[in-house]
Length: 120
Image (cartoon, rainbow, N blue to C red; front, side, top):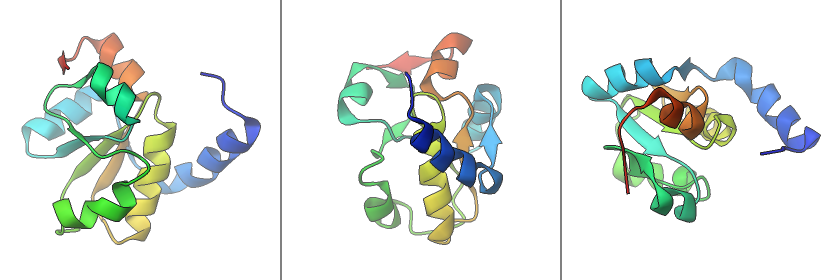
């Protein structure tokens, strides 16, 4: 997807604050109990998503996260289509006090390309 220069600048500005995992690292961390969260739009989630991920779209994650994961030390790995929206969401969750939040580098695109398990 082509992103506007303004959107890319917004993401670029938060990236120094965001920690990232590769798909392989995300799978390892998930096996150790990390929560994998898909922050894409509902229609993207409905089409296909990472196996064992939960859905909490970018539009509501900041509002709803505390109800699902009140322990702010819970390890959360966020992903979107390519890693931009998840980075923005991860940055916001950190501002909300979450200390163990990551964005998955390359997002859904990297997940599919790796051959990692998916489901509908």
